Image (cartoon, rainbow, N blue to C red):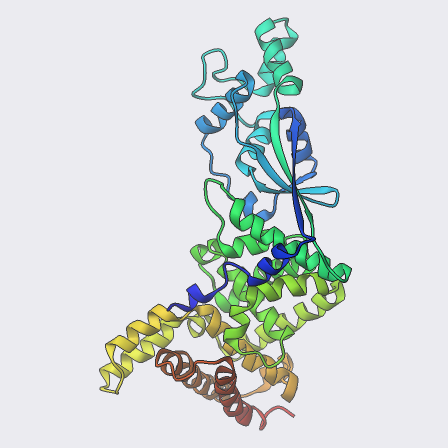
Length: 413
């Protein structure tokens, strides 16, 4: 089974909250004119998380026919929002909202519609109406006041012994609603759902900033495809969680990524997250000082080591190689390596300045030791299923750290 598939999609904790007799998710049906919906969206009252905002995919004809449907009074699907304080989080309907914004801001020229509306903008409708054209006066009135856009408001009331617990339970329900209800042209991945759910929290805001910082980008060198799949956000998030969970197993960090992120997002203060961010960035800089780069964090690199050993006649089969390529995820490797350097920073006092003073040949020797250790954990141990529990993974990582620490102790005082 792929470790990718072991990443959580459904959070078991959600069902505990949903089964609670005091949990209530009420649906209020609201009706606004197209222009009112545009104004609420444009002023930020209807909040669209960045993970959804970047996915506008409607072409001009589709967008134009949506506006035409509003003018002619044809039925349209509802916009679904979650009430959260004074804001409404958009769960489904971004394409429609963004189309309204573009039209009323005169960024959309109607195309592929009825002759009287073809090549028209909102400004041209207003101009024709101001000159006494009765047809266009009617079109303007319809869009401003007469026609309605249905908005389904989901109001969440959840139990919780404390305010923090109640907020955590509310976020769990929000995660589930995003996961189930998002019906857009392009469905969100579980990672995007997680970041949507928590996009206003200090933890997620900071993870976004760190993931796109020069230091982290230089270390991991993510491709555009990986960034599109949220690999940069999820990997960086796993580094933060590694710091938060002392002596973690890399696999447990990944498996509990979603639940732990929700828990920590409602618990951590601004100062906590700032301190955490500095530690992550400092550790990343130390890793770069040792010459670590993208290849050290990819399963393909360790699969190449396997390939070489097969060519050398070592007792490793082609089947093992295919297993390694299939089963492992780069996120686990990144977490293992980061964990080793983070502990070295905490226990040995390894700093950026001290790392810079270590001789180059020593750094090269340390990286070779690291590569061999990671190879054994990532490929031999996990592929062969000789390490099957989090404790054993932690012990295997500890053995690699001990070898690294032995090298470092001579140079870090």
